Length: 161
Image (tube, rainbow, N blue to C red; front, side, top):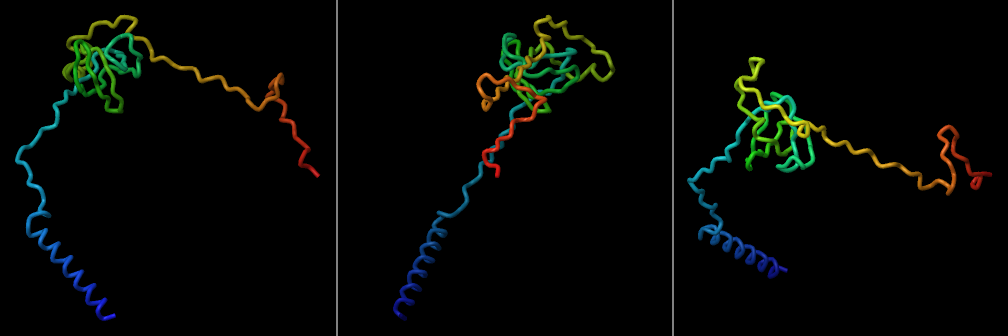
């Protein structure tokens, strides 16, 4: 039994020496940090200049409207593509709007806009599509039975005594 205890101590000592050797050789040193600092991507904060502006899923007027934006609402422009800007709302949500209806914050605090946005065509003021809920069917109803919301369901006496 003493020999077994002595073997355990030797193995432990050997393991500790290996760990110390690894640390001393630099295997456990932290990686060196680079002195280069990367700035976050620049983002532009703009406001909606039109009374109502559709935010769409993609940069085209045929894309579905996912939200309505209102005059004075602040958005962050993530990127631009042609006449469209991909924006992010402070309330959450990312989508595309026509860039010509966004502007800087000047002119909105005084109550009147210095240079009003052009009038939107009727097509661009469409309300987001509302989807009707699916019709609910009663799968447990007897074939040919008519539903009567006034009458209580029939009670089965199968388990009664």
